[in-house]
Length: 458
Image (cartoon, rainbow, N blue to C red; front, side, top):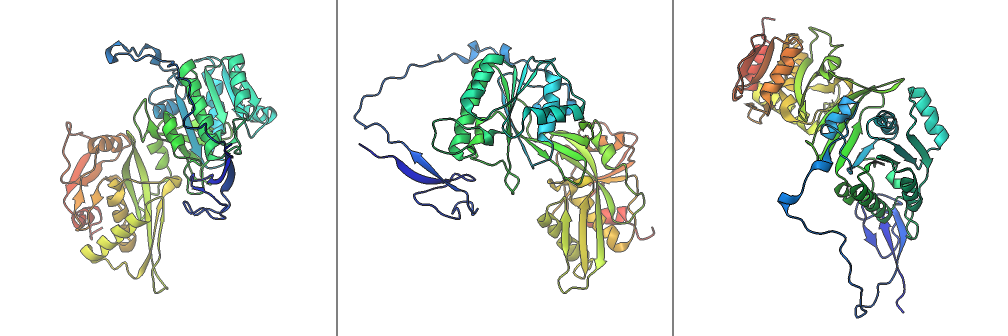
């Protein structure tokens, strides 16, 4: 008779090893290998019963999409990220740093969705019903059809679902659930994978919309196997600085809507409050005519945002000047400073450069290159940028400016907030009639941009 096989598996990356290792060779993390027992399989010659299919193939033209009407979500920012509403039978995974507001957001959504979708079951594996009730009272929430239960065993959770028959199921969190009968512990790769697969099967067969909360690693990605992100329909990340009140709910995968969509919230005493016009909020405290400040028009998903970029250049006292970037890619900042030094002759090798994005936001796209370069030059020359000017453009290594996507949409957003001039690359293709209230300044190179934004006569 075959014996059970014992091996070790990393909880972080899923790397397997026949012996215990203090440090995983796959991800390099310490103390993440756990012991697992694999039961022997039946002999290859043994007869296996033929499986009975539970489904029948259908022609594409015969399949109807009538059952995919979305539940309207009362929170407009959440509805935007989900693609316009909540699809019945969908599985949504939401991750974020501890204390960022994941449970708060889901509890607020549960209290609002009961009137739209029906009963809601909130399953918590980390908090008791009393703790969740205390949070609901603090947030001023009251709901008759929101059911709370503290449970981690998968069979018991499915029994509660069968009893209550909710239309929305929230699992907080997937790393605390486990399937009884498996030798691995809760949170292991195999447990997370199996529990997520069972919840997906539940959602697809019953039409229940399922929300899963996922822990994140110190690198900021959802813990557990990457196959977890392939199982679900939508992956959301709740981002933000714990020292700032603003939170960004970002969609990185969505089978029912556009990806890279962003919803903006503000954390207050009453929970997360949506911000309808985030651009106006992000530049509300801007100091006009201050050197080292420029407005970048970025694009988050389909939403244009106006963000203030600040730079400070100070004489260094060290042999190697410092380059500190907060909210922008440090490598992108080094590229911009190198272009300013080599192509424009600005002596940055003797100055410490600090670049900061206001409100704790992060800019990933290269469309903010021009605003960063203008802010750095403004600080070096001690010349303020015109208060009514915004910037859009990517910088090449030769000092040329390259066009970015959706420039017309960015110009409209700047005009809506009162900016009179928007500087864009000359290769920008006008997609609509010009707006009379805003002047579009087209420039070919970074040198031309600085000569117009920071003339010497100022």
